Image: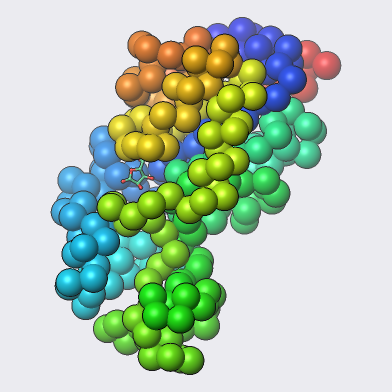
Length: 245
Ligand code: APR
């Protein structure tokens, strides 16, 4: 399967990586679903925009526990670094990620479409100012904007919120033109992100999937299924590509 995946990637003219929570699991960030999933422990409705607006204090408390207490300390893993190397080698043209952990940028990737936003950025709901996470006091029960005292919210997409305009535009454009998608660590359960690989398939893209567990894509659109953890699979895939030169 690595040989077939390598042949598809080398024959492609526009290869895109599409990543989900699974690529960050080996950095110590739990996935949302499956083994050790966050939604087994926490109620996803805490991350619904209505809940945030009506129960801001509780929502912020959960956000800090689940995300900020952890995310500040995690580092990119080998899979993130391999994707950054593949971008430098011109093998992949961009990453579309559902993740909000900034780890693709931390690993050195340059073109990353963050479909669900980025936890490192905080937005003021009143004056719309963007604030860096390092510039606010997370010990406050509800962090407030230093300029207008408006309520601050992580610049990530809560359930019930629209996808940011540019990441959405670029991602759906890629789905129309790319001839190869490498799916890494995603269940394919959450719309509208989960449509992107399917639109790519409809546009004749070859789909390579890396996941230790089958996803909603595996038996429907996946051409090559690498049933493996991201760090192992990406390391092996890069070696195959480098040795085939
Ligand atoms: N390597 C690769 N894949 C892995 C690994 C690993 N080491 N460990 C787990 N996985 C896979 C799981 O098998 C699963 O398919 O990662 C996937 C994680 O699934 P989800 O937690 O559902 O992540 P994702 O598909 O990105 O969720 C999409 O749901 O809650 C929302 O906004 C949130 O962006 C998230 C969206």
